[in-house]
Length: 297
Length: 297
Image (cartoon, rainbow over all chains, first blue to last red):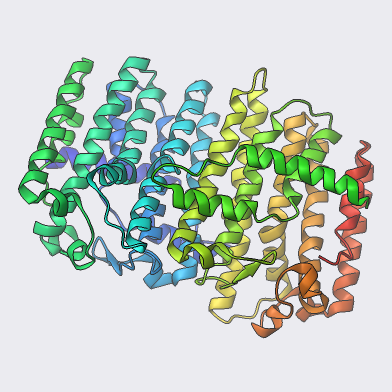
């Protein structure tokens, strides 16, 4: 995909996210600093980009998308801060920088994650104040955001993953797919579905784009499993081989690298086929979906 | 106050809360079990009771209050689960039962807290689906809930407390008041303010009841500090003297037990004066506010 188009999309997402970050002042300045540190650590901003591009594809206009772009990135970041905790994956580096708990301590990192999750809802609620906004759409978007983030979405997948690890219980392919679809897929699904709903897409269109997103999210996570085996540490910004070291069951350990690559490619093709069947156009988004496969970071 | 009236109020709150707890099934059943364990551990259900009684005082009718009663108790419980973590206060008992992280492990307890916080918003959003509901009031209630729970409310107070402790920094009375007003006061304020807003109270009435709540919440926390020194372990369900053991600055260490008791009493009297000036009646709520002072548990 076109690198400079992606750069523009990232800068746009970045600008929106920064607008909603709190000022580091007053008594709780330490936790605010920890919150901002974790969000400003960078990352690809994929979820707000997917959201914005889907919104545009369905003819969305105005600023209503912005609080939701910031909110979904906050939810993604809270999950990273908590995943990295000593009590969880105990990761000291992410995106080449020290993780939040390493800098601010374990307790403050728990609070920073909590603060981000809560702030996501505080932020998204701003959408109601935008002049001329369609409130029913905002209500639907809030329901999607909270539903896909919780026990029936991202958190459910994450909890299942942690549970298997703590009990040294081997997951089978069904459970692994559940984990992938939820831990990673659910938030990408939420991003695109919210973009569609806020733009006023039809029920059928929203249904289709959700399925596209779930395929993309799952393929994305399979690619992550592949990168853990064949990736370049300097490019992906974290240690390679940590899944193997931790005896973790991944898509790759179950099916092998080649089969995993094949499946990810098939999911991506199916996603594109479904995407094209919607009959709306967004070349950038189409390219972005394609670029999820065979990526090197 | 009348014990049996309180019992009825608690059972009513309990019933509403249980209605919104998830079924322990499917892949994420462990985290759901941890969530339910922490909420079902009991407690006084003060926040939903304050909310419900304020709603009634201002003539509120219908079921719109219920999702918010459950939501605020979920937020209160998430904060307890995370406060008790090894990374925070490392408390092994609460309300005479083992804490969530002791039973489910530190990582799962982090996720249970996250799940509860997210579920609070999922639950509160149900209010929009109640037939004939005033959507603007629900939007306002959601804003109060998220605003008072985050960095400008409960979480801000908690983070400030943790920050002072980690840095072994002595807080002065101003900062301690900030901590008390936010860590404990903010959620009680949210409870009563949401009750007022959902019932359609006037702006002036809502303003007054918020000030009542903040006074009550702060007095309540001062009483907690007093109980840590003079309480009965068997009655309060946790260790006595843990603040002193941890060299923690509390209202009592700054002002002494007698002065602390006097201040809590004054706040309570001021709260009642303000309460009476509103000119609406709820004898149970009035008694409940009075009972916050001089309590033994």
